[in-house]
Length: 198
Image 1 (cartoon, rainbow, N blue to C red):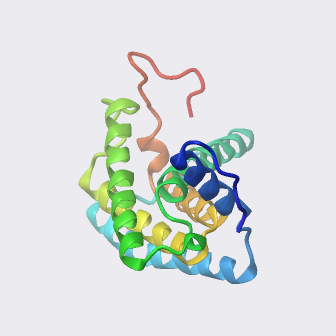
Image 2 (image 1 turned 135 degrees about the horizontal axis):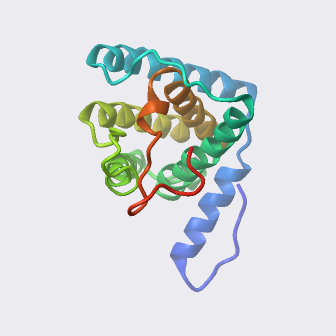
């Protein structure tokens, strides 16, 4: 565990320590297997529910190779890296902190609720009126399940990189193979779409 020198503001020390610990916890073969297991566990629940309710549809996104590569990179940064840094690393105690299970579960619950509510806000602010469905109860159930799986993976490993890769893989499957591209194609920022688009 990396140790941070003390500042005058304890919360700054805590956040800095969590960031350093999570970034420094690299990947290993056992973690890779855990990540594959987490993706499989997520898929075993999410795919039947999503397909049966009609939220997930078998639909491939038609994009050029260059656009695909750039969009995949963008989705690695946001949502995967940004959301995992906020909802797992900053809100959850790193395993090296040695907090009690009860306290960890309390923070895990706070993190999970915040993660789900964030998607509602994202739908209302960024995708307002575009039909992205991020406020759809079916999406929120899938997002909540993903948040739970990611929280468990972070609890077991303390690795930002593992949860980022799991999150990224799930997003890519949804966007490019299960109808996410069509749902997210029209973000609204104020009255016009952002210059970067999708």
